[in-house]
Length: 258
Figure 1 (tube, helix red, strand yellow):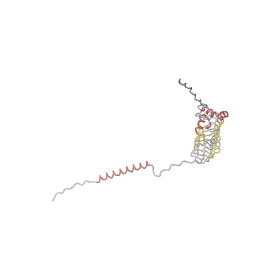
Figure 2: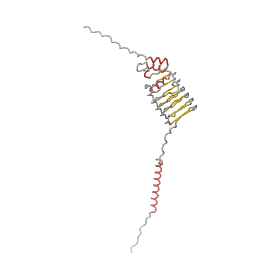
Figure 3: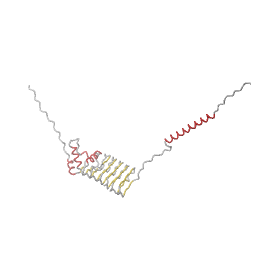
Figure 4: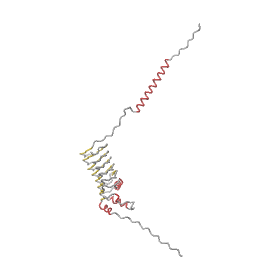
């Protein structure tokens, strides 16, 4: 029997790009993003989606994500790195997994005017350097310990309920009112706000002074002991010399026998 002809190999089906979410194009057109970061395109799903993700975020004018556990430090870092040229409002209220917020240098997000981080329970450090920022809301960030703000245009700053705040350094040419009376554990406060008219602050907690030892320093004790030992040595040597001088040797006397 003649050998059977080999059949043609079946071509593997080509992978098809998954369907785009309708919210993506809508966000590009409107400049508004309100969904968790997990709803953005992911380059791990499709190779070209990384560029699509950047296109969406770069086009944003407003980012309003409320109470999302998916908002983490890396999302805020991604936004700052992309620095959307028209972004003016960033609202991440109630983001339970943000631990730090850094917007720096001053060229990042050049039109950002409003930043709202109300009620982020894990937020501990904030560093903002911005020429454009007008309002900053850090109300009820109960674990916030350190805030550094260098925003010459800042007009409103809310930090009520920040009960753990220890360090506040603030530069603003336009801020007129400040209330940080809830920050009762603050140890350092630097305010460079020439127009500040009303400022309510709690008393600074001074660090404990080092307790002076009741005994003299160890070096002094060693020095005194050495001095006493030298004096004792000199005294003993002097006594030995005096003793040697007072001792006399009486020669034996010979008397003739009668």
